Image (cartoon, rainbow, N blue to C red; front, side, top):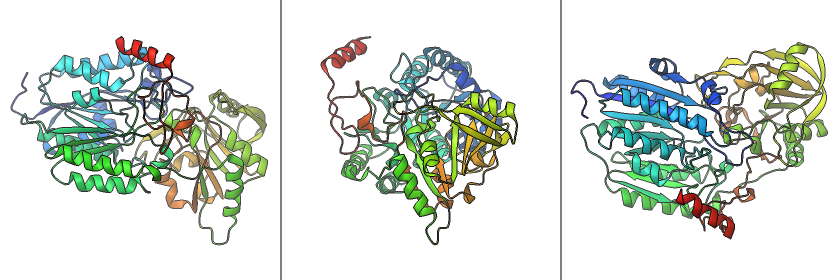
Length: 515
């Protein structure tokens, strides 16, 4: 199955989803087809047309391929917001089409895939591993396959075995997605002569909460600096901090090394990860205490920007629905001035549009999560501004993407302004506020439904950053989640308790493995 000796034929594609198995809603085929705020499903040449200049791994691969003269064969690319499981229907339809399109391009010299690495489906714990297994079954083992992954990938042994190189983001916020794709494409280029690098995989004995994985701060900052030193110019390395909300045995942190000395390099980095465990913890505020402290800081002499609060447990970038109301209640109860976004409530947005700008409207908003302690918040709101929700993202995270949040509105309640949207995407770009007339730089307090990605665009304007834990489906401490299927002994959170399955869970897991 050798390709021609002309320009290398390289198939490219992508299928991305981050799964929170404790989340309130699943990802359907229609969610991937529409992109749920991040762009529709793309096929063939429209992948190159739409993805060449965005912050995505596939963008870096396209740019490298064009620069070195590859014959790029674009197949299928789709993504949607994190949520609970990908439905069986969605996975089967998308996986089948992606593999069929790649197979139709044979003979090939290489395959580049942009995946997330933390996909759990209704019928497979390891979505990416199953996809790669089917791909290898179709195209064989001779064609080199490089896969770019999110820093939060829960990398499995099956993923490691079926990919020649796994190349992961090194920043959180993920401002290096395109750069990661470039590294992955270069790794693929080195394998076009038929060679394969030695490789090594190590698995950490503990999980970390995503709120403390930011690479702008320690310990992650130092660990990725060490990774860069160990990788040097002779090997590829990745450190995946994992997505600690997927209840299956291979959830967790991993280290990978490819090239000469892979085993020694992987050991050195994992030893540093284990030593850093006590530092993967931080300060979390209750909604009321956090807002009170933010109000104090916002009026302090010499303040130069807003106090920015992460509503971390309702982060749609981690599988929440971006519709809890705990932070709205705290701001309203304390009479705080500021802005909060995004609140996902298509029905409330529809009512706001029907009422029109300037209207006064009494209605409930949010609170559909079903999370204990959360409920719809009803009040009399002023519809300050309406928008169709379409805009160009300018910040480092969504950089260059044409986002569409659907019918959107700015609701005003006293001194509080709320960004109401009809599509889910975490608040990680200041344009998300501006699209409904809010300048976040001018607000004393800004609340964002995001855990870390917001830092890329909001940290430069913030006088202070805080983390609050209002009721929501993405627990800031993994130990608070009702785990049932983790591997025995893994510590659930930094310095957290070791997971011990009960007898019923062990029996079910054995039966599950037998299938």
